[in-house]
Length: 129
Image (cartoon, rainbow, N blue to C red):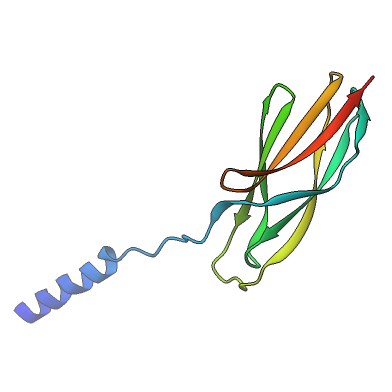
């Protein structure tokens, strides 16, 4: 009888005590972003797209979000890539996307895209009437 109780208690511990592992394969990572297509000069109020290249580390990487912070005539941009899934092929892949921009005031603007810790690629755009 004691064996039956012990077996029953051990069985309950296995049934309710073990938690399923959580999917820890989803994450966001900063990635280097390089502008490959941008105008030198634009008009105020004119919307345009910057062509941006970036690298993903594996087949689970896809575009995430842009984080932009403006300070005067400087726009600092960081690109976060979303990695979703655990079954990924480890290979670097170059991808491209557009980053829409519009300026409402005349001036010279610096667009700084994050490439590495404390390192940015800087692009200058002139905005005219």
